[in-house]
Image (cartoon, rainbow, N blue to C red; front, side, top):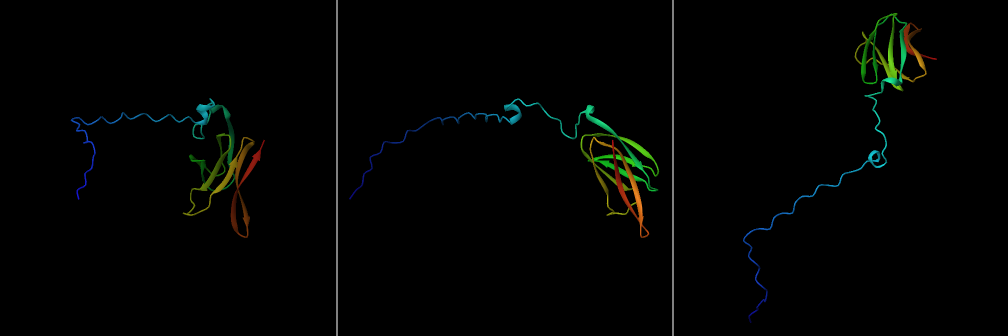
Length: 137
């Protein structure tokens, strides 16, 4: 028994059909674009008008390195004072220059209300304990 399939022959194309042109993706609109919100500056690019002056007073016999956020401020000598500019709320860290590896940092959160930061020490049981004292307006 013979089976016959009746199908029209496939058309033979001499030239292949061109691929469709790629369409650009729709542009994403963030909330800022959608609601026309103003651009805000990050902590790295803080505006100059919002800064406050803070005095760092070293009341110890050690030299300390200072960092404000990720920015190195340099050192403050023993029994010396130094002024820095602080924008809004930032974290100040202080570390002894001669401290061994793994020594702890002194940490303080600075706000616009802080006028002075003192690096002080307390002698307890024959050991020196260093701390930061924050003085407000």
